[in-house]
Amino acid sequence: MDINPEELLQQFASDNYAGICPEAWAAMESANRGHATAYGDDAWTARAASAFRDLFETDCELFFVFNGTAANSLALASLCQSYHGVICCDSSHVETDECGAPEFFSNGSKLLVAQGVDGKLRPGAIHELATKRQDIHFPKPRVVTITQPTETGRVYTLDEVKAISAACKAHGLLLHMDGARFANACASVGATAAELTWKSGVDVLCFGGTKNGMAVGEAVLFFDRALATDFDYRCKQAGQLASKMRFLAAPWVGMLESGAWLSNAVHANECAQYFAKRVAGIPNVKVVSPVDANSVFLAAPDEVLEQLRARGWRFYTFIGGAARMMFAWDTDLRRVDALLSDLEDCASSHTGVVGPAVASSVQ
Image 1 (cartoon, one colour):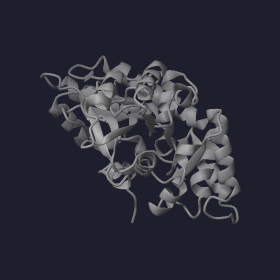
Image 2 (image 1 turned 180 degrees about the vertical axis):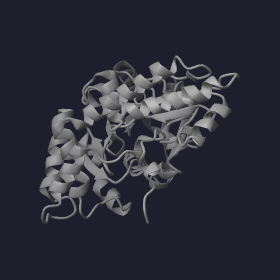
Image 3 (image 1 turned 90 degrees about the horizontal axis):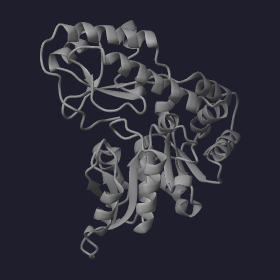
Image 4 (image 1 turned 45 degrees about the vertical axis):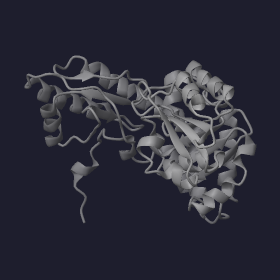
């Protein structure tokens, strides 16, 4: 069956739409030359692990899994017993978009949800939930998880991560970071991978590769090796132990050794800024959330958004009606300009009230 060329045009609904970046592709192609030992006992997996330890400046324990849901859920399950609670923001990805996987893989650990601002969890909310109930009839708080960047595109600064870590330590809690777009956060803050994680008190990181330019694959990093005990068994039991592990690991070699993990994120973030600045001059449309990383949330009348869809543009709208535009490693500014032109054309013909603010999301 022939592929419609229209289907191949760049869209801005998700950075998951993008293909594989050259560095990841070349590493996979190189790993495909001949045979290699299975189940992670190969040179590519060892090389990727070494590259991660160099990047994070520490001898962390790490594992490669297929996707973010598995990474987050298995990581949290490894930190919890079934009677424990996981403190998270009400719009965190584990709460809104994991289909109950964290609870499932932990055999019942409860998500303890706090209201956030821009998707950010606050130290005060951690204190409130950690002390709200301490009787045996309520789940015992054990872990705090933060989404970096948040579901509304905001990035936790170094000081904010450190403050959250301090709140965790005050209550004997571990800190997990869902980093599906961790590279974009590093690019935004201008901090090193180490500074934004273990040097600021993060215990476990799920580092996203898929949205950063890989075909598939996430890395789970335990900065305290003791927390990783038997995690390999969890991966196997959950169907996350790849027999041809080199094809999950090799793309990371290409990404990390070349620096593409960061340059890809810088480009995506810059494209988001480019788009947001030009939207400011379009009538009846406004950016409703500060642009920290590679997402832009727009408020516009429903009629304007429907006209955009009619012209072939794809994007998600969330609770409240805001439209999210995501920018990927391969974003072409000519395509961004085409979107801006259509958006201006649709908006200029409308006389109405600009729509609501952003509230929730999917990745």
